[in-house]
Image (tube, rainbow, N blue to C red; front, side):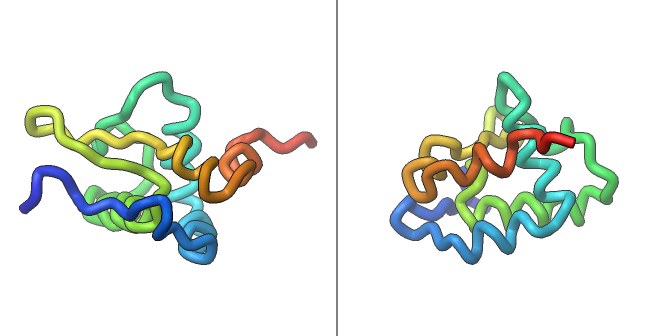
Amino acid sequence: MARVPQHPEVSEFELQQVLEALVDPVRRSIVQQLDAAERDIKCGDFELAVHKSTATHHFKVLREAGLIRQYYVGTSRLNTLRRTDLDEAFPGLLAALTTPQAS
């Protein structure tokens, strides 16, 4: 297994894939938690209502769409939101998705 998973380049981002990744509420929760955090988050530190194997699938979908970057520190896999890359590819999209909606 590679120590650094494959990540798409910004030029490979596809809006359809990003939007499909964000349809799922678990994946939106991951993105929102990363957006609110002031640090990168280990996979096991997210508040998710799914089993570990299901969470692994969700992280993979987000990574392959270009929404998150994963890397290892020791034996821990950390996650970071690819905010700069997403803003370059789709200006304003991430802000629209993570800004709380007015009631």
